[in-house]
Length: 458
Image (cartoon, rainbow, N blue to C red; front, side):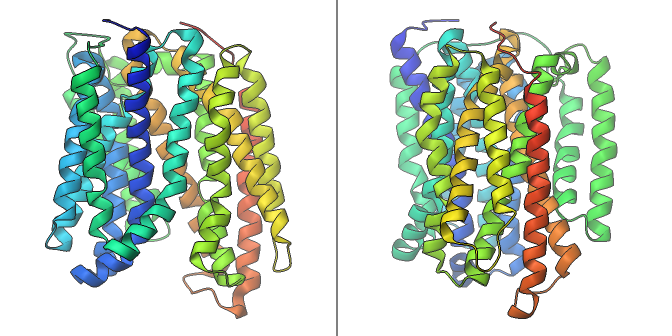
């Protein structure tokens, strides 16, 4: 470990926060740009659907191997590779002549994002002393939710005024700023297990298995999706068996099964299951049932990430001084309350009630996320920060995917594969109410799980 002074801490926080902003911004902007991309490149709905799919799958599936590589070869080095690949891929995507070329660019962007996210919290944990990490994680989470907040708004503005290619060009100067900061201000390197043999076979099993698991679960309603999901389950079981016997695995099961790390990882999974599909549900509710414009809908729904972004730094600072369970339990409880309020929505629900539910969910996430992240990373040994950072991000992606998969299963069960029309408004509302009740249940279980979390300083 080299040179971890105040300047290094600030530089690391700026770098990781900018990287954390880029990824959710790109993901949410890409969804806004899909219709324009389809018109310009004459892409079919299936090909257009693969743009966000390959971005998410590449991001999620490569996290864990990249986290292990960061522990072996250096966390700053792997982070830097991620910025280089992401920036180059963004330029490649912006210049794409065909939809197929753009899909390749989106995949490479996801690969770069995996390198960045696999090392972000590992770098902060390496640079910051244990009694100041909560504040750093608070700013990190703020950056993620600022990206979620600005993605639909700024992305929509760019697409409408400058065309879809502008959202990819937008990433290039930001990537160059990151690289300038890395080479100019961020000196030193942080490794955890230099010289350790990398589990290439385990990674080769893990990457397609997790991709199959995540993709198959979102399409489990048809036979092909079910087959892909089963293949993923089998592959993942084989991977777990190998990790138990391999000397230097990319996933250290014995560390994850410790009470503090297991409870914090599960709680992070559950809060993402509980809250991710909320945006999709409320977007359909506001636009299809209440007839609101997309921009008005985006402004209302963005109340939730705005609350997270505003409160997370303060919560992070407080969590450095107090027992983390105070924040994680109360955060899960407030989130559950917000979801229960949203489970009562109907055609005559006052807008203030919906906003109250969104505010409570946002406050709950802000109370929960910085201390939960701090607890999980603090429960791991310094040598395994890369693996821990990657595991943390994988739990988040898994929770998001499971949330959307559960939502699709509920809606298809109530409505089938049909469009929302006045004739089936009651069916959509029933699926919305049930979905929010199920998500509130997950969040409620998260309250209990959070009771087993405690602050463990390494």
